[in-house]
Amino acid sequence: MQLFDVYSLYDIEPVRGAGAYVYDENDREILDFYGGHAVISIGHSHPHYVQMIQDQIARLGFYSNSVKNPLQLELAEKLGELSGLNDYELFLVSSGAEANENALKLASFHTDRQRILAFTGAFHGRTSAAVNVTDNEKIKAPINRNFPVTFLPLNDLAAVEQELAKGDVAALIIEGVQGVHGIYVPEPDFLEALPDLCHAHGAVLILDEVQSGYGRTGEFFAFQYSKVQPDIISMAKGMGNGFPIGGVLVHPSFEAKAGMLGTTFGGSHLACAAGIAVLDVLKEENLLANAKEQGAYLMEQLAATGLFEEIRGYGLMIGLQLAGPIAPLREQLLFEYGVFTGSSKDPNTIRLLPPLNVTRGQCDQLIAAMKAALRQ
Image 1: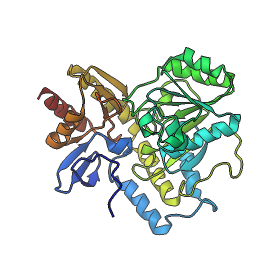
Image 2: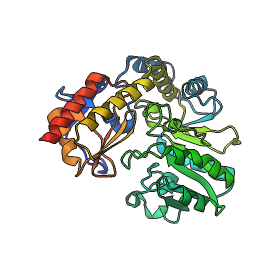
Image 3: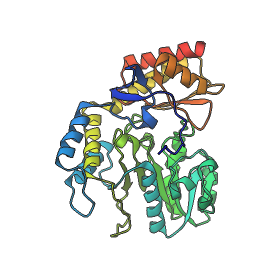
Image 4: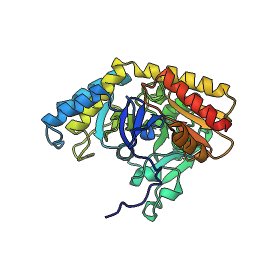
C-alpha cells in the first residue's frame, strides 16, 4: 500500500528532537524555527512533558467521555489560571479544525441563525464548516458550496457593521493573528469594536486562537493585546506540544445541553496529561515572557538588516515579507544552514514560529543564517 500523495515533502527525515532542535537520520542538527506548523510550544522532548505522558500511558491512556476524568478538570483549572479566563467553560476536542467546527455549531445553536462573517485571508481548518469559512477556494470541494458565509476585508469596521445590520448573522469568526495568510494582525481598535457590534445585532464573536494562542504571541491569547471579551475561543496546536488536542472556551452565558456536542477522542486521559504538562512548563519557565522578549529582539535585529520589505507579528509569531518568492530561501536555510522556517499563503512571506523556550543564542543563529542566505 502507498500513502495518498497530498503533501509536497522535503527530502529530510527528523528522527529525534531536543528543545529548539531536531536531528535527521544522519544526526544532522537543525534549528527549528517552524515548530511543525506552530505546534511545538515547550520544545521537543521536554523532560516534564515526556514524564507526564509516560506515567499516564502506564496507568490509562484512554476511556470515553461517558465516565469521570479528573484530568479534564485539572486541565481546565490550570488553563483558567494561566489565561486569566476562569469564568469560561472548556469543551475538549482533538484538533483546531474540530474546535472551530464546534464553535460555529455553538453559535448557530445559540442564535438559531446560519450566516457567518469571516475575513479575507482567513484560515480556520479543513473540516466541513471550518473550510467554508476559510478564504481558499482551492481546498473547498463541491460539497462545500452554498454555505452561508460572507468574507469581509480585515480591519474594515464599516463593512462588518453593514453585514451585521442585516440581522441574520450567527457569528463573526476572526483569528487573533492571521497565520496562514502571512502573519496579519487585526488592528486593536477594530478588534475592540467587534464585541459590542456583534452583540447589538444578536451575533456571536468567535476568536480563533488555534495558531496564535497558548503564549505564541507573548500573551496567552493574541486577542489579549486588546480589551476584548470573545463569546467563544478556539485553540489547539501549542496546547499539546505535538499531542493531538484542541479546545473550545465558551462564555458562561451559553447554555449547555446534553448531546449538543460530542467527541470520541477529545479530552482523553493521555491528551489531558500532555495538555497539563504544557501548562506546567509555560508557567514554571515563564515562557510567555520569554516569547515576548525573544520575539521583540528578533524583530528588532531582523529589521536592522534592511533585508525585508515588512516585518509583522507579535512575540514568536513573525512574518517576514520579501520582494520575491521565499521558496528558494527556505530550501537554502534548511539544506545549507540547518534552519527550519515556515511558508504561508503569500509566496513572498516566510513565517517564524519557534518553540517558546527558544534562547537568545538560537535567535542569533537564525539571524546569522538569514543574513548569509539572503546576501548570497
